[in-house]
Length: 263
Ligand code: 48F
Image (cartoon, rainbow, N blue to C red):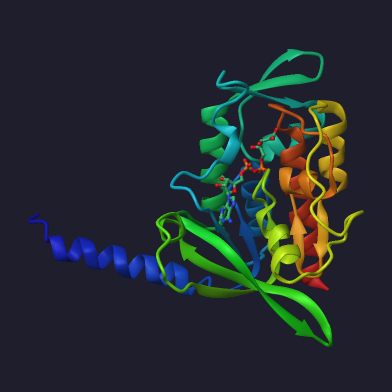
């Protein structure tokens, strides 16, 4: 076979544009490809929900690759075993109810499961803003504003594009980037104690894990939080290299949205 360079370029351009056009209007737009949002993407696709995930970095995976202090293993607890099994993760039991997973295998498996389930990950795209609309007289987050990540990094004056979504999930981890857009740009109040992103507290695994799952949900009409973004928005203790809470949070937001969209 004689390879034609133009056909290689044409194939990539056509395939990417088909994928992007198919996701200009989605049920759920997920921001940030950390473990919680990728797990949400997997369960949403499994429930038949049309979703897409946008990640600013080259490699999806967020804070899962490096394990604890670069020891590339993560811990999950008993409560998250069902999610781990759904995701096809292999784990080793250490001591009563504590399991370890190779963090490279865990991250790559979760990425692959999310994409293969039907929720594509658009990497190298940064979400810089939201579409903020009044629907029946009430404000609602109705989509995302996107730009190539290098545009912001290089401070280039290039206008973004936007996509429409019934719901947006902030899974941006520690910065809770999308929640901050609401308070910074729109001067609106989140559904938190202060109306703003409260910020995370010092590490306490037990409390942090429970807090994250309990506070996963809608933080503003049309905007949901999952994973560390939920923890940060509502002001809970961080939990360190244990990932069961992230998994349960991703599943919880997917279940909530699948049920809501069915209504
Ligand atoms: O932080 P991250 O891994 O999210 P998570 O699912 O998981 C947290 C854990 O990894 C860990 C932890 C658990 O013990 O504390 O930190 O909550 O991933 C967040 C992803 O969001 C991307 C960022 O590059 C990362 O991959 N991101 C952040 N801001 C934006 C974004 C943005 N504005 N647009 C697109 N992606």
